[in-house]
Each structure stands twice: as C-alpha cells, then as structure tokens.
Image (cartoon, rainbow, N blue to C red; front, side):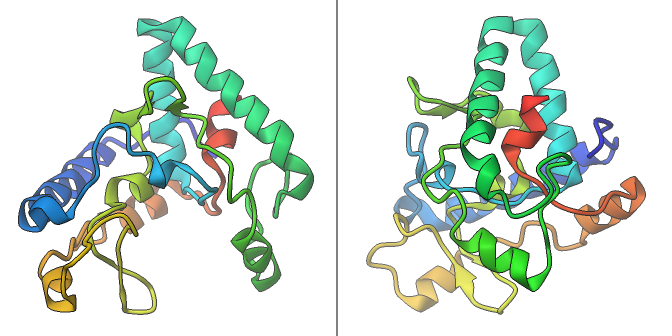
Length: 199
C-alpha cells in the first residue's frame, strides 16, 4: 500500500465533507453523531489505498506536531495487529485482505470488538480525524449500499419514517472521483487501519 497521496485526494475529501455537512443539516436532531460517540470506531472495516495514504500523511504530521501522541497511535496499532493477526482473513505480511468469497465470509465475523487504533481511549475522539478513511466520513447519515438500500447508524434516525430517512440521503462521491484516484494510484486491494498505522 502506498504512502503517496494524490493531490486530488484533498478535493475528494472536500466533496465528501460537504455532502456530510448537507446531510447533517437536513437530518437535524436525527443525526446524533458527536465527539465522544465511538459507535463507528469499534469493529474492523476495510480501507483502500487512498485511505492508507491519507492516514499515513496524518500520522506523519502528528509525529511532527505531537510525537508522543503519534507514538501512542502506533503502539495501539501494533497491539491491535498482535491480537488479530492469527485470525486475519488475508496476507498478514502485506496486510492485504482476501477478497475472495471465502475471505469475505471470514471477514464478516473478524475483529468485531476491536477498537480502531486511531481512537484516543481517554478522550473518545480520533487522533487522525482530519485524515480519517472514507468509511468514517460517511458513517451516520443514510448512504446507499451496494444492495440499493439505505444504511444508517443504529444510533441515529430514531423516530424517523423511511421517507424522512430517504430525504436525508448522503451522496458522498457522485462523480466517482475516488474510483478515478484509485486507478491513478494503480493500487488494488484493501487492508485495515492498523496495518496503515503500525509501520
């Protein structure tokens, strides 16, 4: 996985963050995401090469501004990998997940209780928030999944009708810039946040 971050990744982040802001405005009190809420920080999830590059860029900046905090992030990432590597559904050397049907089936129950190493356990906030993966940026508001349904955080939209939820749908990357940037990088495969931060 690369360390180089494409220049247009910043544009992608701006597009997604603007879509989140718009969805949050429409959702109002139904969207309960706030600093200290860590529902989306528990459980393993796959990240792509752009996410890896962004996280590593963030960690490098954190090393310059707060080396102790950056060291804690890396220690948490290494401890995470120590715990999960024996069950890792992929290549533990490269950190690349097995995307076969069998690998994806193994990933469904993998590391469900593991806390993201970027999460500061004392403050309940992300030490790399500005550089967080796209999955983190779109978690909470209604987002259309591959099956065509709308997925939302289980803590959000209590009391909202299906129509209310649909009216708050977030369209994070309508022009598919992320796909273009991944092609530009020439990187395939997905990994975990811990692999991106431990090395």
